[in-house]
Image (cartoon, helix red, strand yellow):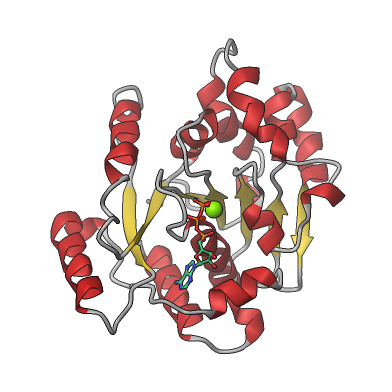
Length: 261
Ligand SMILES: Nc1ncnc2c1ncn2[C@@H]1O[C@H](COP(=O)(O)OP(=O)(O)OP(=O)(O)O)[C@@H](O)[C@H]1O
Ligand SMILES: [Mg+2]
């Protein structure tokens, strides 16, 4: 993973299934990496802007968002990045917020050549300023998801440990396989088991099944159910700002796995 020693590694968090913990993973991992002294940029690619709101960067207060990168010309990107990024808190995480206009992007860009590599090209301008750039993706196939997958050095796939978990994964792997046909290198990915309920045999069985299926393609750390995540997002805080928690420690151990890759 370390081909460009100094430049940021781009981590996209995606799964075409909704509500599996993508945004929670993106935001908490970003915070965990920042606590480990890494410089982090979070890019919110979901028109609903949940990651932005979770980080207390409210779209209605932002004059600029990541939408501007997609809607304006490359010559303007350098100047735009200065306006789009908002610094959050003293444990420095920068945030490029989303905007509802992102939901029109597939139509807006329909005729645009090279529309899948816009984000990769634009991130190249800020990569040297960070150790990690975390992309929170929307739960459906769109030009935003394609841009994220093409831009990423590692795709993180949160998988909820319940019986319907593997349902929906096929959609994502169809997308990955399609892109792999045109990309110079196949997309690297690692699955992350989320919302694991230690008390239930069913949850344990699903985890075993995942581990058998994914093997090395899975993080060793597992994220359990922790009600603090919901509390944190409702307050526009990351879980670490609520004190010690099991969930916080688990994401910290994922962050350490990422750093060690
Ligand atoms: N480990 C966890 N334990 C308990 N609740 C969790 C956990 N992870 C996420 N949640 C909660 O589950 C809900 C869905 O999580 P989240 O928004 O991260 O999923 P998502 O995949 O981003 O959803 P969407 O597909 O809508 O973007 C949220 O209310 C979140 O607080
Ligand atoms: Mg989300």
